[in-house]
Amino acid sequence: MLPIKVIKAKYIEGYKIEIKFNDGKTKIIDFKDQLWGEMFEPLKNIEDFKKFKLNPFTIEWENGADFAPEYLYDFGESKKDKATMQYR
Image (cartoon, rainbow, N blue to C red; front, side, top):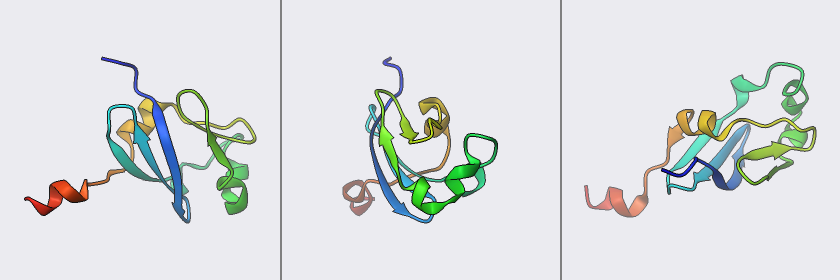
């Protein structure tokens, strides 16, 4: 099994980001309650929060804050594939 990586990330609203992983899983993660501590407190400013980018394995903010891809994989709500849901 390959190490889990974030391959795509899109800002949704508030402190929510849609994240796609290299195994095809997509999650919507609300970071609102995760922004504490020295590195993450500045991200409570929503304009700073929106300024994330992808590095080779996860999302990262301008101040160097990031979350391990394994943590993100286990956190948040899985986004259902619309095509799959139509046939259930």
